[in-house]
Image (tube, rainbow, N blue to C red; front, side, top):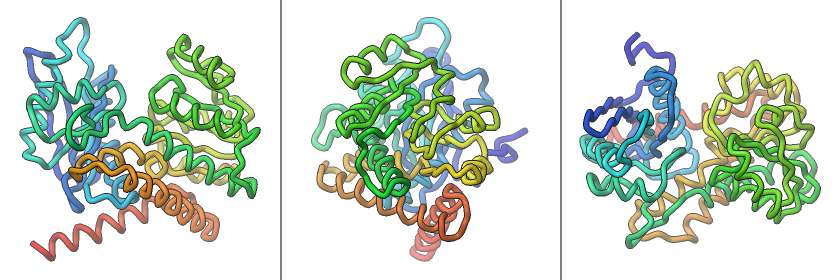
Length: 356
Protein backbone atom coordinates (compact mmCIF):
# COMPACT_ATOMS: atom_id res chain seq x y z
CA UNK A 1 0.00 0.00 0.00
CA UNK A 2 1.41 3.38 -0.99
CA UNK A 3 1.09 6.58 1.04
CA UNK A 4 -1.62 7.82 -1.33
CA UNK A 5 -3.82 4.83 -0.49
CA UNK A 6 -3.11 4.97 3.24
CA UNK A 7 -6.34 5.31 5.28
CA UNK A 8 -4.88 8.28 7.19
CA UNK A 9 -3.82 10.14 4.03
CA UNK A 10 -5.98 13.26 3.68
CA UNK A 11 -4.69 15.00 0.55
CA UNK A 12 -1.50 15.96 2.35
CA UNK A 13 0.49 18.45 0.33
CA UNK A 14 3.82 16.75 1.05
CA UNK A 15 5.14 13.69 2.89
CA UNK A 16 8.92 13.53 3.29
CA UNK A 17 10.82 10.40 4.32
CA UNK A 18 14.30 11.22 5.63
CA UNK A 19 17.09 8.85 6.59
CA UNK A 20 20.71 9.36 7.60
CA UNK A 21 22.81 6.23 7.99
CA UNK A 22 25.56 7.90 10.02
CA UNK A 23 23.30 9.19 12.78
CA UNK A 24 20.59 6.54 12.54
CA UNK A 25 17.91 9.08 11.60
CA UNK A 26 14.64 7.67 10.32
CA UNK A 27 12.07 10.43 10.13
CA UNK A 28 8.78 11.25 8.42
CA UNK A 29 7.51 14.81 7.93
CA UNK A 30 3.89 15.33 6.99
CA UNK A 31 2.81 18.69 5.53
CA UNK A 32 -0.97 18.61 5.51
CA UNK A 33 -1.90 22.17 4.58
CA UNK A 34 -0.19 25.51 3.94
CA UNK A 35 -3.41 27.33 3.07
CA UNK A 36 -3.02 29.80 5.95
CA UNK A 37 0.78 29.87 6.04
CA UNK A 38 3.78 27.57 6.52
CA UNK A 39 2.88 24.23 8.10
CA UNK A 40 3.85 24.19 11.74
CA UNK A 41 3.81 21.36 14.23
CA UNK A 42 6.07 19.54 16.63
CA UNK A 43 8.47 16.66 16.19
CA UNK A 44 7.67 13.42 18.05
CA UNK A 45 10.60 11.20 19.12
CA UNK A 46 9.26 7.76 19.88
CA UNK A 47 9.97 4.03 19.81
CA UNK A 48 7.63 2.76 17.09
CA UNK A 49 6.93 -0.91 16.50
CA UNK A 50 7.20 -0.36 12.76
CA UNK A 51 7.64 2.31 10.10
CA UNK A 52 3.96 1.78 9.25
CA UNK A 53 3.02 2.95 12.75
CA UNK A 54 5.32 5.96 12.38
CA UNK A 55 3.72 6.88 9.06
CA UNK A 56 0.22 6.60 10.49
CA UNK A 57 1.23 8.88 13.35
CA UNK A 58 2.77 11.45 11.00
CA UNK A 59 -0.29 11.53 8.74
CA UNK A 60 -2.87 11.71 11.52
CA UNK A 61 -0.94 14.21 13.60
CA UNK A 62 -0.23 16.55 10.68
CA UNK A 63 -3.91 16.61 9.73
CA UNK A 64 -4.73 17.28 13.37
CA UNK A 65 -2.32 20.23 13.38
CA UNK A 66 -4.11 21.78 10.41
CA UNK A 67 -7.37 21.53 12.31
CA UNK A 68 -5.82 22.71 15.55
CA UNK A 69 -4.13 25.73 14.02
CA UNK A 70 -7.12 26.89 12.03
CA UNK A 71 -9.48 26.48 15.00
CA UNK A 72 -7.10 28.59 17.08
CA UNK A 73 -7.20 31.21 14.28
CA UNK A 74 -3.44 31.13 13.76
CA UNK A 75 -1.67 32.39 10.60
CA UNK A 76 -0.01 29.01 9.98
CA UNK A 77 -0.81 25.71 8.32
CA UNK A 78 -0.55 22.20 9.70
CA UNK A 79 2.31 19.74 9.72
CA UNK A 80 3.97 17.22 11.99
CA UNK A 81 7.09 15.09 12.08
CA UNK A 82 8.09 11.86 13.78
CA UNK A 83 11.52 10.38 14.41
CA UNK A 84 11.84 6.67 15.04
CA UNK A 85 14.06 6.38 18.11
CA UNK A 86 17.20 4.40 17.21
CA UNK A 87 17.96 1.20 19.04
CA UNK A 88 21.06 1.19 21.20
CA UNK A 89 23.35 4.16 21.73
CA UNK A 90 23.33 7.18 19.43
CA UNK A 91 24.56 10.77 19.27
CA UNK A 92 21.44 12.79 20.07
CA UNK A 93 22.86 16.13 18.94
CA UNK A 94 23.99 14.69 15.60
CA UNK A 95 20.66 12.93 15.11
CA UNK A 96 18.65 16.12 15.56
CA UNK A 97 21.05 18.05 13.34
CA UNK A 98 20.36 15.46 10.63
CA UNK A 99 16.65 15.96 11.22
CA UNK A 100 17.22 19.71 10.87
CA UNK A 101 18.73 19.15 7.43
CA UNK A 102 15.59 17.25 6.43
CA UNK A 103 13.42 20.13 7.65
CA UNK A 104 15.58 22.59 5.74
CA UNK A 105 15.05 20.63 2.54
CA UNK A 106 11.39 21.70 2.62
CA UNK A 107 12.44 25.35 2.14
CA UNK A 108 10.24 26.82 4.85
CA UNK A 109 7.08 24.88 4.01
CA UNK A 110 7.40 23.23 7.44
CA UNK A 111 8.46 24.73 10.77
CA UNK A 112 9.25 22.24 13.52
CA UNK A 113 9.02 22.44 17.31
CA UNK A 114 8.90 20.17 20.38
CA UNK A 115 6.51 17.30 20.89
CA UNK A 116 6.58 14.06 22.87
CA UNK A 117 10.14 12.97 23.66
CA UNK A 118 11.72 16.21 22.43
CA UNK A 119 13.16 19.10 24.49
CA UNK A 120 14.09 22.74 23.78
CA UNK A 121 17.73 21.59 23.79
CA UNK A 122 16.93 19.23 20.91
CA UNK A 123 15.54 22.21 19.03
CA UNK A 124 18.88 23.95 19.53
CA UNK A 125 20.49 21.01 17.74
CA UNK A 126 17.94 21.33 14.92
CA UNK A 127 18.67 25.07 14.75
CA UNK A 128 22.29 24.28 13.83
CA UNK A 129 20.99 22.94 10.51
CA UNK A 130 17.92 25.06 9.77
CA UNK A 131 16.22 28.29 10.76
CA UNK A 132 12.79 26.70 10.28
CA UNK A 133 12.48 25.79 13.95
CA UNK A 134 10.82 27.31 16.97
CA UNK A 135 10.43 26.58 20.68
CA UNK A 136 14.02 27.65 21.32
CA UNK A 137 15.16 28.40 24.89
CA UNK A 138 17.05 31.57 23.91
CA UNK A 139 16.75 34.39 21.41
CA UNK A 140 14.84 37.62 20.84
CA UNK A 141 11.42 36.00 20.63
CA UNK A 142 12.21 32.68 22.35
CA UNK A 143 9.25 31.11 24.12
CA UNK A 144 10.97 27.95 25.39
CA UNK A 145 8.97 24.94 26.54
CA UNK A 146 5.34 25.34 25.35
CA UNK A 147 4.04 22.76 27.86
CA UNK A 148 2.87 25.29 30.49
CA UNK A 149 0.69 27.11 27.95
CA UNK A 150 -0.71 23.84 26.60
CA UNK A 151 -1.63 22.86 30.15
CA UNK A 152 -3.31 26.20 30.81
CA UNK A 153 -5.41 25.82 27.67
CA UNK A 154 -6.48 22.31 28.68
CA UNK A 155 -7.34 23.50 32.18
CA UNK A 156 -9.48 26.27 30.73
CA UNK A 157 -11.23 23.68 28.55
CA UNK A 158 -11.87 21.36 31.50
CA UNK A 159 -13.24 24.23 33.54
CA UNK A 160 -15.56 25.24 30.68
CA UNK A 161 -16.85 21.66 30.43
CA UNK A 162 -17.39 21.50 34.18
CA UNK A 163 -19.44 24.69 34.02
CA UNK A 164 -21.66 23.16 31.35
CA UNK A 165 -22.17 20.02 33.37
CA UNK A 166 -22.66 21.62 36.79
CA UNK A 167 -23.68 25.20 36.11
CA UNK A 168 -20.59 26.51 37.88
CA UNK A 169 -16.91 26.76 37.00
CA UNK A 170 -15.96 26.10 40.64
CA UNK A 171 -13.53 23.17 40.50
CA UNK A 172 -13.62 22.47 44.23
CA UNK A 173 -14.19 18.75 44.77
CA UNK A 174 -14.31 17.95 41.06
CA UNK A 175 -12.59 14.59 40.55
CA UNK A 176 -10.19 14.39 37.60
CA UNK A 177 -8.30 11.32 36.39
CA UNK A 178 -5.14 12.42 34.59
CA UNK A 179 -3.55 9.85 32.29
CA UNK A 180 0.10 10.57 31.50
CA UNK A 181 0.35 12.82 34.54
CA UNK A 182 4.15 12.62 34.81
CA UNK A 183 4.71 14.29 31.43
CA UNK A 184 5.39 17.99 31.14
CA UNK A 185 1.85 18.95 30.19
CA UNK A 186 0.32 16.47 32.66
CA UNK A 187 2.37 17.84 35.52
CA UNK A 188 1.49 21.46 34.79
CA UNK A 189 -2.17 20.50 34.37
CA UNK A 190 -2.17 18.77 37.78
CA UNK A 191 -0.82 21.98 39.25
CA UNK A 192 -3.69 24.01 37.80
CA UNK A 193 -6.25 21.46 38.96
CA UNK A 194 -4.81 21.27 42.47
CA UNK A 195 -4.76 25.04 42.91
CA UNK A 196 -8.38 25.16 41.73
CA UNK A 197 -9.43 22.66 44.41
CA UNK A 198 -9.92 19.57 42.26
CA UNK A 199 -9.26 16.05 43.51
CA UNK A 200 -6.68 14.36 41.28
CA UNK A 201 -6.13 10.71 40.41
CA UNK A 202 -2.99 10.10 38.37
CA UNK A 203 -1.38 7.34 36.33
CA UNK A 204 1.74 7.12 34.21
CA UNK A 205 4.24 4.59 32.91
CA UNK A 206 6.82 6.41 35.07
CA UNK A 207 5.30 5.65 38.46
CA UNK A 208 8.29 6.99 40.41
CA UNK A 209 7.80 10.45 38.93
CA UNK A 210 4.27 10.55 40.34
CA UNK A 211 5.50 10.71 43.93
CA UNK A 212 5.97 14.43 43.36
CA UNK A 213 2.29 14.71 42.46
CA UNK A 214 1.30 13.05 45.73
CA UNK A 215 3.44 15.44 47.73
CA UNK A 216 2.69 18.67 45.87
CA UNK A 217 -0.84 18.14 44.59
CA UNK A 218 -2.32 15.61 47.02
CA UNK A 219 -2.84 13.23 44.10
CA UNK A 220 -3.80 9.56 44.36
CA UNK A 221 -1.79 7.14 42.22
CA UNK A 222 -3.42 4.23 40.41
CA UNK A 223 -2.06 1.66 37.97
CA UNK A 224 -1.77 2.92 34.38
CA UNK A 225 -4.42 0.44 33.22
CA UNK A 226 -6.76 1.16 36.14
CA UNK A 227 -7.04 4.85 35.19
CA UNK A 228 -9.89 3.93 32.82
CA UNK A 229 -11.99 2.48 35.63
CA UNK A 230 -12.03 5.47 37.98
CA UNK A 231 -15.39 6.95 38.97
CA UNK A 232 -14.58 10.59 38.36
CA UNK A 233 -16.08 13.68 36.78
CA UNK A 234 -13.37 14.20 34.17
CA UNK A 235 -11.04 11.83 32.34
CA UNK A 236 -8.06 13.84 31.09
CA UNK A 237 -5.87 11.88 28.62
CA UNK A 238 -2.44 13.50 28.46
CA UNK A 239 -0.35 10.72 26.90
CA UNK A 240 -0.57 9.19 23.43
CA UNK A 241 -3.58 8.88 21.14
CA UNK A 242 -6.31 6.34 20.33
CA UNK A 243 -7.05 5.76 24.01
CA UNK A 244 -10.82 6.11 23.51
CA UNK A 245 -11.40 2.86 21.66
CA UNK A 246 -13.70 -0.20 21.71
CA UNK A 247 -11.60 -1.79 24.46
CA UNK A 248 -11.72 1.19 26.83
CA UNK A 249 -14.92 3.12 26.20
CA UNK A 250 -17.17 0.75 28.18
CA UNK A 251 -14.88 1.11 31.18
CA UNK A 252 -15.28 4.88 31.49
CA UNK A 253 -17.36 6.07 34.44
CA UNK A 254 -17.05 9.78 33.77
CA UNK A 255 -19.11 12.80 32.78
CA UNK A 256 -16.50 14.46 30.59
CA UNK A 257 -13.41 13.62 28.52
CA UNK A 258 -11.07 16.58 28.17
CA UNK A 259 -7.30 16.27 27.94
CA UNK A 260 -4.08 17.21 26.20
CA UNK A 261 -3.37 14.08 24.14
CA UNK A 262 -3.67 14.30 20.36
CA UNK A 263 -6.00 11.96 18.43
CA UNK A 264 -7.72 10.66 21.56
CA UNK A 265 -10.48 8.98 19.57
CA UNK A 266 -9.32 5.79 17.84
CA UNK A 267 -11.99 6.44 15.19
CA UNK A 268 -14.41 9.28 14.52
CA UNK A 269 -17.23 6.94 15.56
CA UNK A 270 -15.96 6.98 19.13
CA UNK A 271 -17.27 10.54 19.39
CA UNK A 272 -20.80 9.31 18.73
CA UNK A 273 -20.30 6.53 21.28
CA UNK A 274 -19.29 9.06 23.94
CA UNK A 275 -22.33 11.17 23.10
CA UNK A 276 -24.60 8.13 23.30
CA UNK A 277 -23.31 7.46 26.81
CA UNK A 278 -23.97 11.05 27.86
CA UNK A 279 -20.24 11.86 28.11
CA UNK A 280 -19.26 15.39 27.12
CA UNK A 281 -16.21 15.40 24.83
CA UNK A 282 -13.93 18.41 24.34
CA UNK A 283 -12.29 17.91 20.91
CA UNK A 284 -8.61 17.46 21.67
CA UNK A 285 -7.16 19.69 18.98
CA UNK A 286 -9.30 22.57 20.20
CA UNK A 287 -8.41 22.59 23.89
CA UNK A 288 -4.78 21.46 23.55
CA UNK A 289 -3.77 24.27 21.17
CA UNK A 290 -2.03 26.33 23.85
CA UNK A 291 1.40 25.04 22.91
CA UNK A 292 1.13 25.90 19.23
CA UNK A 293 -0.32 29.29 20.17
CA UNK A 294 2.77 29.88 22.27
CA UNK A 295 5.02 28.73 19.42
CA UNK A 296 3.21 31.01 16.96
CA UNK A 297 3.89 33.88 19.33
CA UNK A 298 7.57 33.15 18.74
CA UNK A 299 7.18 32.80 14.97
CA UNK A 300 5.61 36.27 14.86
CA UNK A 301 9.05 37.60 15.81
CA UNK A 302 8.22 39.48 19.00
CA UNK A 303 6.82 37.20 21.67
CA UNK A 304 3.88 38.88 23.42
CA UNK A 305 2.38 37.08 26.45
CA UNK A 306 -0.78 39.20 26.20
CA UNK A 307 -1.37 37.99 22.62
CA UNK A 308 -0.94 34.39 23.76
CA UNK A 309 -3.33 34.88 26.68
CA UNK A 310 -6.03 36.36 24.43
CA UNK A 311 -5.75 33.40 22.08
CA UNK A 312 -6.36 31.07 25.03
CA UNK A 313 -9.47 33.06 25.95
CA UNK A 314 -10.65 32.76 22.35
CA UNK A 315 -10.19 28.99 22.51
CA UNK A 316 -12.75 28.82 25.31
CA UNK A 317 -15.23 30.68 23.12
CA UNK A 318 -14.57 28.32 20.21
CA UNK A 319 -15.06 25.29 22.45
CA UNK A 320 -18.32 26.80 23.67
CA UNK A 321 -19.54 27.24 20.09
CA UNK A 322 -18.72 23.61 19.28
CA UNK A 323 -20.48 22.27 22.37
CA UNK A 324 -23.51 24.49 21.74
CA UNK A 325 -23.87 23.19 18.20
CA UNK A 326 -23.37 19.59 19.32
CA UNK A 327 -26.16 19.94 21.88
CA UNK A 328 -28.53 21.86 19.62
CA UNK A 329 -28.01 19.61 16.60
CA UNK A 330 -27.74 16.34 18.51
CA UNK A 331 -24.45 15.48 16.82
CA UNK A 332 -21.02 14.52 18.21
CA UNK A 333 -18.73 17.39 19.15
CA UNK A 334 -15.78 15.93 17.23
CA UNK A 335 -17.83 15.86 14.01
CA UNK A 336 -18.90 19.48 14.53
CA UNK A 337 -15.29 20.54 15.16
CA UNK A 338 -14.02 18.68 12.07
CA UNK A 339 -16.64 20.34 9.88
CA UNK A 340 -15.77 23.79 11.19
CA UNK A 341 -12.03 23.19 10.70
CA UNK A 342 -12.41 21.86 7.14
CA UNK A 343 -14.62 24.78 6.18
CA UNK A 344 -12.05 27.27 7.46
CA UNK A 345 -9.20 25.53 5.64
CA UNK A 346 -11.18 25.39 2.38
CA UNK A 347 -11.99 29.09 2.71
CA UNK A 348 -8.31 29.90 3.25
CA UNK A 349 -7.25 27.72 0.31
CA UNK A 350 -9.77 29.44 -1.97
CA UNK A 351 -8.52 32.86 -0.90
CA UNK A 352 -4.91 31.81 -1.48
CA UNK A 353 -5.74 30.49 -4.95
CA UNK A 354 -7.63 33.66 -5.85
CA UNK A 355 -4.67 35.79 -4.82
CA UNK A 356 -2.15 33.72 -6.80
